[in-house]
Image 1: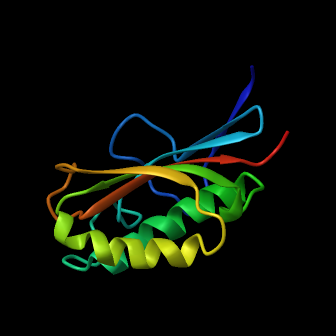
Image 2 (image 1 turned 90 degrees about the vertical axis):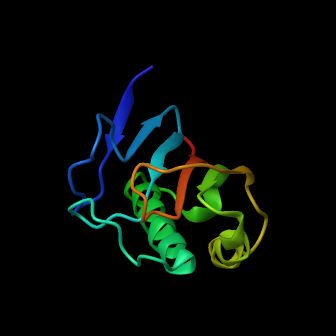
Image 3 (image 1 turned 90 degrees about the horizontal axis):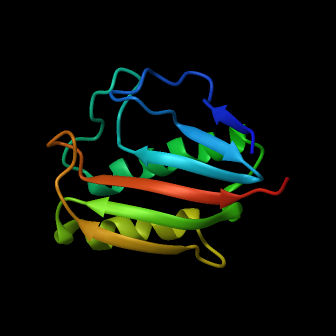
Length: 128
């Protein structure tokens, strides 16, 4: 099965060996996305809502570059560093998924940079 690497314009170099997204057989797999700027610095330090918005905008750009929309997202994996941010993350998340919600899971864990409060990976079915 052929695959296409999805890299939105203006994307920085990842901090590890991965790509922003991969399109295969009409499915977009978006890598774990952190609240990083183009130089891999954490943005909006201490603000879980702003970090979540930044992450979801980055995910949106990958999906749109592949030809889809956020309505095509079928599954999200959410990683947060502290359950106290759960409510803020969910409020922003609901703005990006106002209708039928994708399936998801959410776990608390450590992230690659201590100032990052949230990471999200997504799967979207955009067709063939």
